Length: 90
Image (cartoon, rainbow, N blue to C red):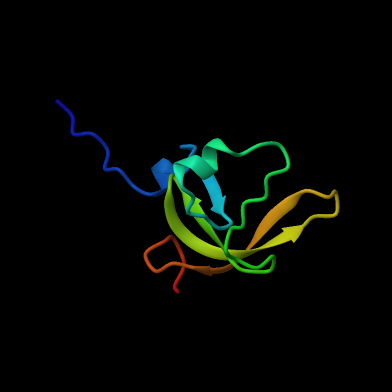
């Protein structure tokens, strides 16, 4: 019987993960949430130019700034990578 090849970071390169961004959050009572309607404004407690958390599968791995691309789409420009994330330091 042969021994399986060791698992390396390079061998995981093609696995897809979910990358998401947390812009801010708000605490609301259930009654406030039930009153949400079209046009409701929910303050997130952060400024429009505040850094955002970049998450991979729900784990914060970096912090960055929201930027607008030439085609009008939004993107994140990474400002710092958390220690322990591939290739980065805080």
